[in-house]
Amino acid sequence: MARILLVEDEESTRLFLAQSLSEEGYELLEATSCAEAAQALRSQPVDLVILDLKLPDGSGLKLLPEVIARDPGLPVVILTGEGGIPEAVQAMKLRACDFFRKPPSLSALKETVAQLLRKVAMQKEIQRLAEEATADGELPFIVGQSRRMQRVMQAVERVAHTNVTVLLTGESGTGKERIARLIHEKSRRKQKRFVAVNCGAIAEQLVETELFGSAKGGYTGATERPGLIERADGGTLFLDEISTMKPELQAKLLRFLEDGKVRRVGSTEEIPVDVRIVAASNENLPKLIESGRFRQDLYYRLARVSIHLPPLRERKEDLPLLVAAIIDHCNRKQLSSGEPIRGLTAEAFACLEAYDWPGNIRELLNVLMSAAIMANGPYIDIADLPAPLSLATALKATAAPRVPDEASAIASGSLLAWERRCIAEALQKASGDLQVAARLLGMSVEELRKRLD
Image (cartoon, rainbow, N blue to C red; front, side, top):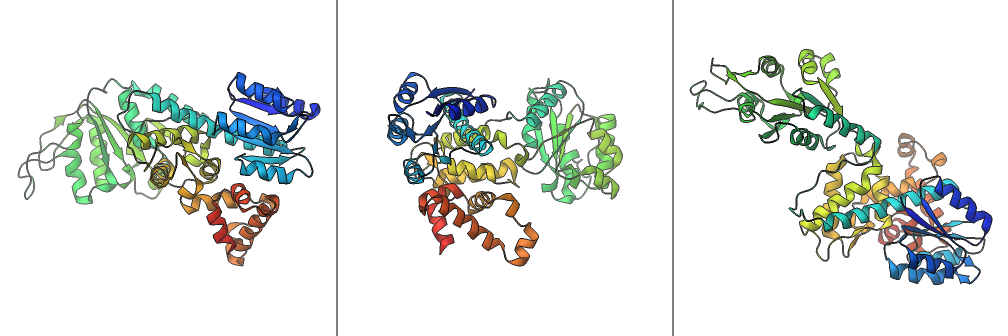
């Protein structure tokens, strides 16, 4: 449970915010002055501070240096009344994460708090992983805590101990091979081979030979060699991109699934093989059946159990764990040019949350590995990320009711005007301070200057 320190002297505001945030599952510590807040920070660790700038014993600004000195990564959200914007801007320069005018929008405050606490959770996970002794440098398998991935794991647990065929579906990059490996590792076959085959990556004329093997003299230049099905005997065979398999080979695979015997290319001998098949597809197989490109009987034979892996954009609550695991992997591989990466800045993490990740976990891995190499310090900043991520955050910062649909925006040439309006609003909110406006937009100061030119 995340712990929040709420520093607010107005009783009605403090009680209202404390109750509202407690209902979200957070533990609340309350303070009414700088002195009480300082004592609370010394007595127990907190994950986030909500700080009113106007307090009975002085400005909340004088508390910020102590907060930063105790924990540079501790997020601080500022509350300010009318006329307190200059102080709020100063607080942002001192590394506060965001500020709200009083009374704050409760929904906006909750969203900001949740986002910042996800970043805190990510940094704690990075530290936990770094302290583990299993430093083999390999990227660990991270399931995530989202409800959809928990359902995936429940299905994996139930199917692993059986011998039924499994069909994994989902977009490219969602981790289908990792789930297939997990099924194998949890099965009674784990001591035998796990053989992975990308059906779409093998030349069409070689797929049959690769899978079923060949007999000596079966065709010109043929030698006696077992196929991948035989090599996986006793273990698990993972057939990725099964949708690319040609109809005649689909028929041969179906025959093997029915009788458990392999006939090498050019041979009449049948060889019994005990192997568990896990197949995967990023295409809609029922639609391929309708178009005649995939056999219906093979589909039903493969999909005795079907498990769908959700895209990353539909389980962004898993980002902290995924990011932590990837950063820990980067540190073990010593990808950073300086000291180990400790995490992401709030702006950089906001970019990850705003982006839709069409390449899913594979794209996230590539982005963070690149960012770890480019980072100048222990924290990956927004300037270390590819431009599409910062642009995604900037566009989502605009008010939803005024956003034109994509087609009409491009057709009318209003997309640029929309972006300029977004920047103008951020500059107005930041009282013209470029650094604060860049933070609000989720982009670097350099990127903001380019867009203003």
